[in-house]
Amino acid sequence: MASWNIDLAAELGPRGVTANVVSPGYIADTELFRAKLTDERREALIAATSTGQVLAVNGGERTTR
Image (cartoon, rainbow, N blue to C red):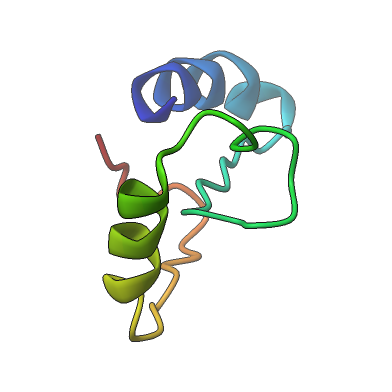
């Protein structure tokens, strides 16, 4: 997604359109993960989620891959 977003931003940026991607981690109450994770994997994902994150909103000054 990140690479696609960089290409999209390069294509649409000159027209004044910004491109952003939100990449969430595990979200329990969604159909996306239901019946696809073992109980062990689900517990590992939850255990690994302990802190917050700073989102760099810089208008595309720096891209990420």
